[in-house]
Image (cartoon, rainbow, N blue to C red; front, side, top):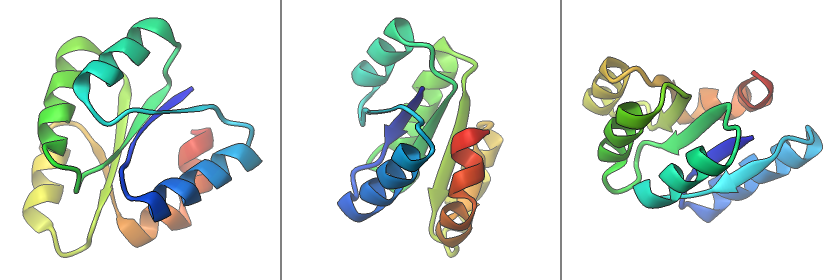
Length: 109
């Protein structure tokens, strides 16, 4: 099961549709309380985070305090500082276009 921390409806639908086609279960959570609850109640294999969410890096830091689950993030290609900081926190970072090109692999991986 994968936690999806994405608010943008267009992106969320693309991810959900691909997950359905792969029969991969998703839980949508966008705040730390929801993520914590999901981590406690479910066997989570990874968390996908839209790094452009408000306080996305705070969310990543909080997750890292309580879990070693894999975190995959995506953002725009021009957001160099965000990419660097996310990588320094242990996030597997993709620019948005590459993320969606590799979405199938990411969801099964």
